[in-house]
Amino acid sequence: MKAALIKEFGGTEVLQYTEVETPVPGTDEVLVKIHATGVNRLDHYLREGKMMPDIPLPHILGSDAVGEIVTIGADVDEFAVGDKVMVVPGYPMKKEDQNITPITLAPSYGIIGAANQGTYAEYVKVPAKFVVKDISGLSSELAATLPMVTVTGVRAVKEVGQVKAGDKVVILAGNSGTGSFNIQVAKALGADVFSTTISDSNIDFIKELGADKVINTKKEDLVTAVKEWTDGKGADVIIDNLGGEFFSKSIEALKPKGVLVSMGFAASPKVSFDVRGLFFGQTIIRGSIMGTKEDLEFGLDLVRQGKIKPQLGATLPLSEANKAHDLLVNGGVRGNIVLKP
Ligand SMILES: NC(=O)c1ccc[n+]([C@@H]2O[C@H](COP(=O)([O-])OP(=O)(O)OC[C@H]3O[C@@H](n4cnc5c(N)ncnc54)[C@H](OP(=O)(O)O)[C@@H]3O)[C@@H](O)[C@H]2O)c1
Image (tube, rainbow, N blue to C red):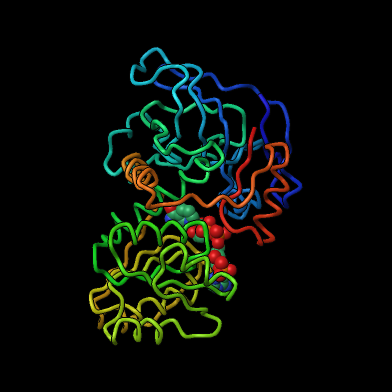
């Protein structure tokens, strides 16, 4: 099969479109012919080699896949050849961990394309337990934008943040892949949403996603603006995909016993804060990583109801994976980038 892979870490030029062996599914696995695959920031971090530099090379990147089942392992009875499916973008790499709840806590939990060979390819093999029927009703391009951001958003906002109707929720970086879904999940759960950007040109888009209030954090202070928005009380929940200075500001912007969900580091992985703000405020800090099959199914149901809209920024052939990474690195594309094998 054809795949876009890296044989060394580096710039976008290290992505090569080449011939590799087609995977052969095990008895509990299915082989999915990929119709479209998504590009995530994780792929860029992995390609650079700054994250997980021990990955054996050559390596196929990619976590998001939609397509159809073409081969079924002998022990799989819940799917048929031809079923249109979406792959859960992370799962335990060891079979004995597959029943741990939530699955993200399994010791061998890994993200496809990081812990094993990924989806920048014509085919991927996956345990049948971590495949869902594609109920989105969308084209493959649109559907391929969904898996990672959907599981991440549902888990971070609904399960870890425990956002509920009427909550005042801050979703940082509303223009980002993750932020744009976090906003939509929070709105679907009935929350009031405050969001941020570092560019005025993103404000209208973030409002269109459902945010009730958006500020440019280069022009306005996050803490002051959130306090104003909440009549001085502070936010119930903040979903932080930025890290850096936004982490400490989030602690300050929360109400007493408010919840800070840390789920990314687009600004910086290094944070520092004054512990007095933490314990005086009795702040609850929780981490959130990826999500489960149930999170994906919950999110897809919201998509079907029209409460979450996929954000497709650009579609390129798989042979141009390096161009897709250029677009990701250089910015300027709003929404997810999709590759078509
Ligand atoms: N926990 C999980 O399971 C999970 C899953 C997926 C991703 N993530 C992580 O979440 C983070 C975001 O990923 P993504 O794919 O959503 O990113 P993305 O779509 O590439 O967007 C990056 C965002 O970061 C903002 N940004 C960059 N530098 C900034 C700075 N110095 N100050 C303020 N804002 C800044 C940009 O703001 P503007 O749009 O305003 O320019 C942009 O919205 C990454 O660290 C990623 O690894 C975590």
